[in-house]
Image (cartoon, rainbow, N blue to C red; front, side):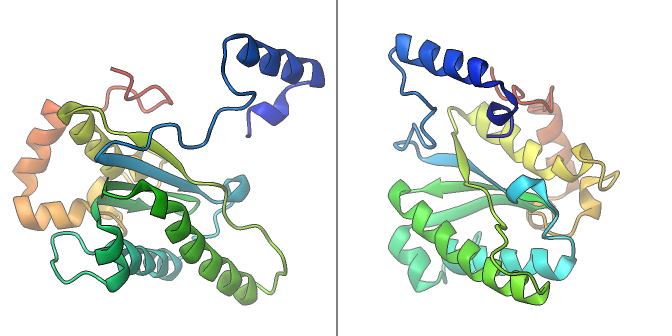
Length: 210
């Protein structure tokens, strides 16, 4: 959305015509691949505003995600999570966006889960900030995980995201991150070895095109 609206009317028309000439829909479908086992899910605040500026808000969002998606490594999932059969494998919650690495058995339920989470938090945060009808969230996006290498590179990408954005100098310094779960479960050396074996070579938009 952000790049498209910067185009002139002529450039937009040219882009749409090019897509149609190649047999694509006029605009990219939001969720083109829905039959994989693992996905990187990304959600950004609208206009990348930092609506999750406090630890309490980030923790509130994380608690709601676990309530709906299910707890990592915990068999006692919520009723909703048991119904949808979703497992969180990694997470990072930042001030203006968040990433989840999830195992998905029923892709179609994701939109409803995000609608419930984001709808509840939008209403509460707008009340807290004394703002009416503010759009808090932009649409969620997904990236299908294609291989074991892609999976573990994505895991590293998630854990190093706060470093990428200049929020901390070490991934261990960011609270709302699954790096602490992996640190407790597997140890620091395991995380170091994982980074060496599956490095994130480029933090740009093409970081996982391999």
